[in-house]
Every structure is written in structure tokens, then in C-alpha cells.
Amino acid sequence: MNIEKKYHIITFGCQMNENDSEKIAGILTKKGYTYAEDSKDADVLVINTCSVRGNADDRFFGNLGQFKAVKQKKEGMIIAVCGCMMQQEIHINDVQKRYPFVDIIFGTHNVHQFGEFLDRKLEGNKKRVVEVISDGPIAEDVPMKREFDYKAYVTIMNGCDNFCTYCIVPYTRGREKSRPASKIIQEIRELADNGCKEVMLLGQNVNSYGKRGEITEPCSFAELLDRVSEIEGIERIRFMTSHPKDLTDDVIEAIARNEKVMNSVHLPLQSGSSRVLKLMNRKYDKEKYLQTVEKLRERIPDISITTDIIVGFPTETEEDFAQTLDVVEKVRFDSAFTFIYSPRHGTKAASMEGAVDDAVVKVRFEKLMDLLHAKMLEQSVEKYEGKTVEVLVDGHSQKDENMLCGKTRGGKLVNFHGEAPMGTLVNVKITKPTTFHLLGEVAE
Ligand code: 5AD
Ligand code: SF4
Image 1 (tube, rainbow, N blue to C red):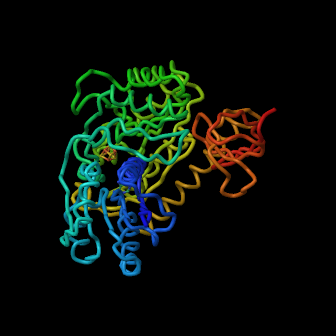
Image 2: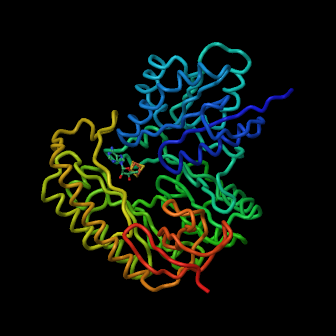
């Protein structure tokens, strides 16, 4: 009897990691594995790690230990660990020493080879497989098992050359490199042929798309947006992340002229203090950031602007923090991810003096959240009160199973009453805008 082999993948971190996990799932599916809801039932368990902040590391190590017992109960189970943490010597050594039950360790540049690594173990190789290279080109034509039919992540570039002083990404994802436009267009055409309506173009810094890598045909990010817009069947195009220093006029014009490109930009601020921004090596200052926002709003009045902010970067003073609050007050972000600074081994900021006291950081963080939330509510009411908006139906509301949910063109979550098939675009009348989401009902 042929017993079905199963896999399970645990993914930490960003959309890039989620997209890598879709590739790992694709490789396993091609090998005949099916998905197991519960990791305990898996013949192959893959843990895709994130290293961007300290709590991601802690969550991984907090989780890993329990799989020793799981593996003991499931004969022949293979456990693989990959992702950004496995690009760092310190973590590879830790896993090797403390977790001997891990069978395969591989890096972010080796994802496409996972099938070969697995074969080595299945052939009875007793030795642990460790395959990590420090950098490599983006592999093409890797099979992918996507989570949804109607929306998809498409990686357009990978890696980063910016070296913001707090950030580990340039060390874990390597140098910036773009995929050839023809490959991206081909992937999105295939998605559209299979019913996909919304694509999210992914990269650490999408605005510098086309500048580095194996460029066989010149194509800027603005041109790429034009080309993706031409693909029949695709109705919504999102992208992230935009670095404020690279959000040039031609990209703003491409968003404005292409109806399918969503009016939504994720524009990480990190800090409102020009002094701190300099220490962070962000290459823009407070004024330049505010000018970029002004330009965006002038050209695309209903644009949604979301951001990332770090509190407690080394040497941050009350005055620096007041500048961050000032930008939040002025810009009124539609939503924001806020982080407490955490030193990352190997980055420049990790050896900077002037650590900010934990208690001070906590007070600042709460102040920031209060202001952000007040401004988010203001934006939500101004933009959506009494309006009818287009929503891509995405599932059931987490709070109420009887309600559907989905996102507006600006990326705001809507929970709504009414009937509509999954993956379709519907008009929803907003009955109540709140800070984090909107409530509504399907419009007649
Ligand atoms: N500490 C805190 N936040 C960080 N981020 C990146 N590195 C760190 C760090 N060391 C945040 C930034 C980035 C987001 C993905 O994570 O705000 O935009
Ligand atoms: Fe990290 Fe800066 Fe690159 Fe973003 S732009 S991935 S924050 S180094």
C-alpha cells in the first residue's frame, strides 16, 4: 500500500519568507507530498525563520525544542530549518550544537535546491545536511504552491544594498538583485490565466527594481507597473516595500496613471528626526520625507500611506522622539508597524553607544501608539464614512464567522455582512469606520 507522505511548514517573518515557503511547498508537492494541518502528522517539517528583530529569534528557539518529542513519536520524520536566521553563523552553530534532531539546515539562497537536500536524507544519509551560501542569483522556474488562487505574491527583486545601520537584511538576503521583467510578466500571466486577480510585487526596495542583478532588458519599476497593468485578468496591483529615498516622480506618475495599481504606498519612516535618520543611514531627512508625502498626496489625493517606525534607536533623545511624533501628526498615516529597536548581531548600530533606557522606550512607544491610533481613526472616518468601496472578498471575519472580510483598494480591512463568492470584487457600503478596520454591508 502506498501511504501518502505529508509536509508541514512553519513560517516566521515577512512576505518574502511566505513566498519562499510557497516555493518549498511547491517542491514538496511536486515530490508527491500533501499538506498536513498539524505538524505532528508531517513526514517533513520545515521551519522558515526570520531574523529581523530579536523577538523573532526568541520565538524560533522557543518553538524548536518541542519538536524533539514530536519527532520521536513520528518515525522517519525529517526536520529542516531555513530562512534568514540560517544565513548567520552564530545561529547555524547554535542549532547544530543544541538541536541534534534537526536534519537539514539551508539558507535563503538555497531554497530552490531543497528537493535535492531532502533526497540526500531520504537515501539514508545519516549526516546532517548543511547548505548555506552567503549570496546567489534569484533562481527561476521554481514550482510554487500558492496559498490562494485569487491573490499572489510575486518576488520582483531580492536582497538589499542600503545597509541601514540597524538592519540585518543585507547580511541575510545578500546584495540587491532584480529578476528579468520577462520572467515576472510570464509568472503573472500564468497566475492571471489561473484566475488570479491581485498581485503583490515584493522586494526589499521595489523602487530600485531593474538597477542591479542579471539585467538582460532595461526596465524601471515604473515601466514594470505599466507592463503588469496590461495583463488581462489582473485587476489589482500592490507592491512593497518602497524606500523613501527612491520613490521617484516616475513611480508616482505610474501609480497615478495605472487604474489597476492600488493607491497605497508602504513608506517606512523609521524616525522623524533627521539626526537619527543620518545615524540610521537612511539617506533622507525629515523634510525630504514630508515633501515626498506631499507630492504623493498632490498627485494621488486618496492615496493610503502606511509606515514602519522604530522607537529607541541608540542616542534617541526626547527631542528626536518629538520629531517622530511631529511627522505622525503631519502625515496622519493610514496604518503603521511600530517596533522597539533591537540590536542585531553584526550590524553597525549593534556596536553604537547610547542605548536608551527600557523604561523610557516603553513610555515613548505608548505615546507613539496613542497618537498613531488617533490619527488612523481620523483618516478612517474622513476617507470612508458613508462611502461605498471596492473590496476583494478574502474570507470570513476573524471576529464574526457570519461576516465576510477583504481589503479596500487602499489596503484597509473591511468586515461586512452580505453574500459574495471568495476572490471576487464587490462594492461594500461602509456603515462604521474604526481605527483598524471598517464595518459595512454589500451594496445593492
Ligand atoms: N530593531 C527594530 N526594528 C527593526 N526593523 C528592522 N530592523 C530592526 C531592528 N534591529 C524594522 C524596520 C523595518 C521593519 C521591517 O522592521 O522598521 O522597516
Ligand atoms: Fe533593511 Fe534598510 Fe534594506 Fe530595508 S532598506 S531591508 S531597512 S537595510
